[in-house]
Length: 110
Length: 115
Image 1 (tube, one colour):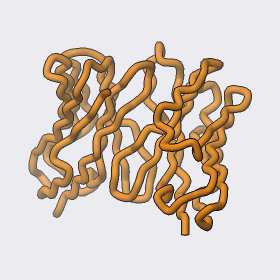
Image 2: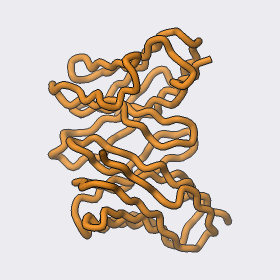
Image 3: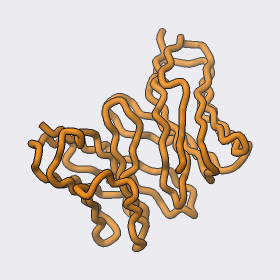
Image 4: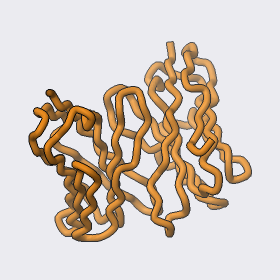
């Protein structure tokens, strides 16, 4: 059974700082996804990572995947308040069934 | 509309009543999923439909939960004899077939409160 764990679960940081969210998964998975959720809203897709060594960047967010270590990271560069949200990673089990991590609640303070 | 549509957006029901939650996926998306999100928690997989294949029901928490997908499009999640622990946000998502790189597109969810 695939398990996905994120850390930290809560993260409070100052604007302008850099930080990384970690996502570990327990068994082989073909794909790794990152989603963002704002309070009271649904999930928005950020990245889909397909292969070992994959790196994708969008603005201040960069995601990477190491399939050998079963680890994905979401790196935030020079954080701004608008990035405050809950971030979820999800790994694929079987035919496109996604198993989600617990989520990381990110708060960015001015 | 262009996105996944769910209705109702909010549902308050008494313990023991049955409820039906509806999901209209994005047109052309062959895969449809139901997830449940309890307050402050992650997403719990419930059920997955792919085309005409038999659905993956492995996440349904009890036999009080069932789901249908008619004509490969609209889906209904039914919860019978609701219990307080069923209170959660029920999220529906759809995507293109696996071979086409496609993340899940989520609806805004139905917030279910069982009193």
